[in-house]
Length: 230
Image 1 (cartoon, rainbow, N blue to C red):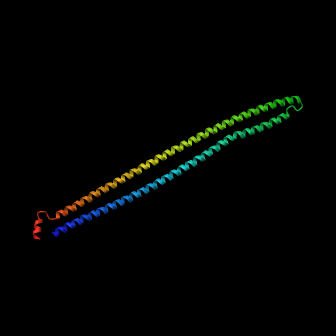
Image 2 (image 1 turned 60 degrees about the horizontal axis):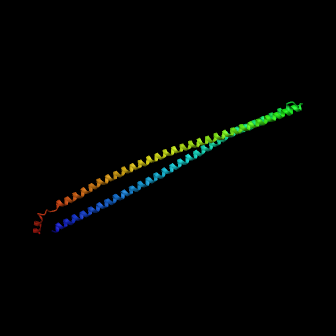
Image 3 (image 1 turned 90 degrees about the vertical axis):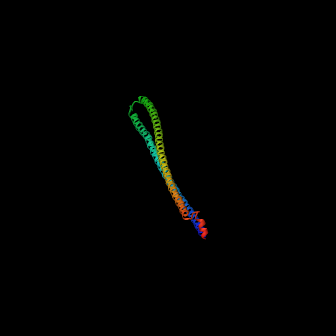
């Protein structure tokens, strides 16, 4: 009886040790999984931060480039608009000086004719000045319209370019996020598959050990003989 009791106690102790070992193994696996998950989260956060920084830098570069191009275009249009005005002023100066000199040389001995001619020339000069003013206004108006149209076209083209590049960057980021999600899902499946296989092995070893212990124990029919001998 004492031998049987000892064997039973040993078997129970063995079962308890196996359970403790299994619990410890489970705890270790949980800790390892938690560590892996934490590392993955840190890596994802770092990748997201890097992507955000890169995207911000790219957007800032594009904005700087767009502002620079806009300033260059405005300066060029101002130069184009200012060029006809300078040319008109030069023409006015040359025409005015030439007409004054010719008026002095026409009919110096005839006062009446000179007066009439001077009046006619003054009228012609006034008409020419008015025509020049009108031409100047028309040119300035056309230059302003051209400037406004070119600026609007330029700004709209830059805006369209920026919008197109932003959509491309957003699509790239979405594709990268989808790829990361797929990688994470595949890794989780692998971890679960390994855990399930290991769990099956542990159960098999546990039941095999119990079966060996049961086979080593005496049968119920032999117990009375053991009692009689003792």
